[in-house]
Length: 151
Image (cartoon, rainbow, N blue to C red; front, side, top):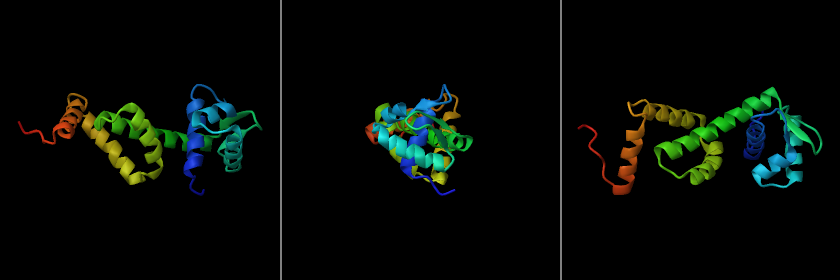
């Protein structure tokens, strides 16, 4: 299957996130989530339906297929891991992290994403759940001085 565009990934993710607690979502919900007009959502859903990723009733409901759910889940997980990396480790505020994650999730390679997730795991494995790693980094950012971690 040909790679999905950033826009297509965003639409899938919006359907996935809006439908977490139910099987179908309204086109209007997707439009509201993405801040776009209904005709744009309809056009995108038609394209995604042709690729077998959604089932779409004209101006009605949208449901992800199994293939659509798998792809949307992958995009959503990348997004949430990037937010977690930015907030928990780098100390970026949540709003900025959300905005940046939306941009980054499409650009970060699979290899880099794996490394970010592994670093999150590494930093979280300490006795304090990674808090000291994040605290030391924030001190470094604020002061420009490295801490002496040996002592």
